[in-house]
Length: 157
Length: 118
Image 1 (cartoon, rainbow over the protein chains, first blue to last red):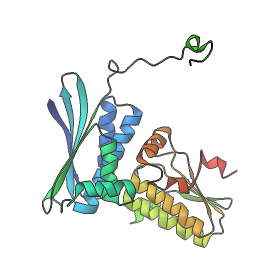
Image 2: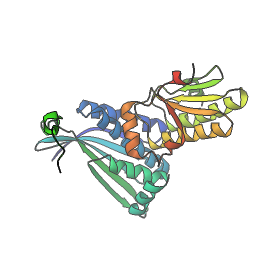
Image 3: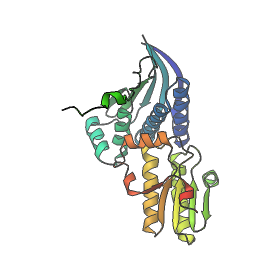
Image 4: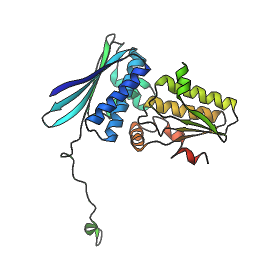
């Protein structure tokens, strides 16, 4: 898999978080992601940038384009040297059931990404990596067309 | 910060506070809007509050929770609150994020500001 770094942005304040969201959306648009995918990827960027600001105070994002044999993807690496997360599984379970923002951001990011990875060490920091692949047109199944002829006559028993 | 107050249009039209979120907001601006709206409710004799998100391409969990809490606080002050103009892709993303988790079921949603301000 080839990786080409497109952009690196420090995340230190609210304005950086907005910058990250906009940069990620622009890259997703350039790579040909659908509107829905762009919206989800930007949402992920926003959640993870906020986690850095809230829990680690500062960090950074690296935006890369990844290419393997027959597909292209957008890879985002969020890195910080904050306190780390003691129990990731627990945080994400809480994220699903409550409004605990750290876990919720992680849970949403996992749900909205094709590949989600988190490496965290208590006292040292956290790295969250998310990758989304562009759904290429060739790989998409043709739309299923409703054929009334198939439904004529008596219903199947 | 002064720029925060200048940037966010908050209007009063016929007993209704209309907040039109037009561009990408940072968290502090979102907080500032909530403060402005609640202050305005206290100062003016209004009956309704509409927050339009027609200008937003992304609503993340923080913004969603802040919108819901602003509308709930307004309700506590006797003002009927509405969320208006959610874009289709944003709607889809919010549904996938989980409406219950974001408490979006607790607020009234309309398609546009005109549905409230006649």
